[in-house]
Image (cartoon, rainbow, N blue to C red):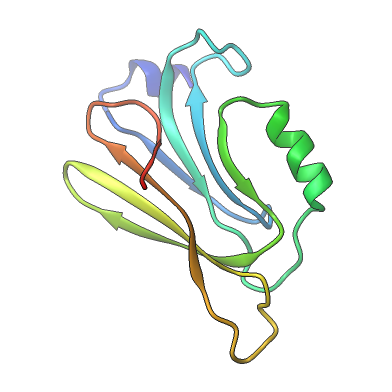
Length: 124
């Protein structure tokens, strides 16, 4: 986190997976210190078909970390990224029924990272 805070790169975005839930979060220089500066944005995509955490556990995790802006483990899907020089948009696409052949996807949430503004912001 210190390297991100003091490095030349700006508008840092970290991408992850393998936690079986969609997540949008702020990353701070000092974890668990809400007065610490935001140094990056984090987006994690859910699994396509594998089950996630129970919503009870997912909610408990989110309540314990105010920098988690979005977290859903009850639906499956993917994250669609639109990356441009002045901003990046992450759209979490999801379905409640991934095993059904006719399951439809919808936009679960959208976040944007704008150049010069630290952390993701809800878009819409």
